[in-house]
Structures are given as structure tokens and as C-alpha cells.
Image (cartoon, rainbow, N blue to C red):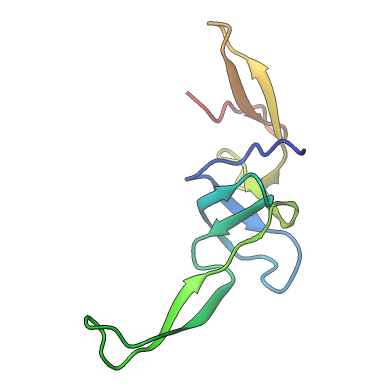
Length: 107
């Protein structure tokens, strides 16, 4: 099983597919299916049945998951896409590091 180093709240850019170039915040990470939900990316219209709160029903827009291989984390210092590495800090804890600039992502 692949290691997902993306976390909820990370800012990513879509690198391939229909939404190439779009940027957004990671809303959810699914480790089993290797997919992520990115805010305002891959938005679909889903039909809603009528309920008591919404008696007419209608369509609801929501994000659909995209595969984790299609997104890259944005480096906080350069703003470009980067890979994620793991190293240990001074206290001996594992932290995520942006490979392009060496910036520590986790405090």
C-alpha cells in the first residue's frame, strides 16, 4: 500500500487530468482508495430527492474525489509544486519536508 503524505488542510495543485492547473485545499484524504477531495476541483452536480427540508429536490454541487497521483503539494516558500519527504527534527519526531526547498511542513 502506498504512503500518502498529504494531509487535510494542505494546498495542492492538480498536475494532470481534466482539472490540470487548478489549486485548492485538501478537504479529505481517503487512504484506502488513494483519493483526495480538493476544494472547488472536480465539482459535480448530484441529484437530490425531495425531503421535508427541501420539498422540491433539485441538484446539489459537491466535490468528487481525484486520485492522489494527480495532485502535488504546493511549496509554502516558492509556491510551486513539490514532493514530500520525511525527516526527523531536533526533538527526534518525524516531520514532513518539502523536497524542493527543504521547508518543514509540520511544526
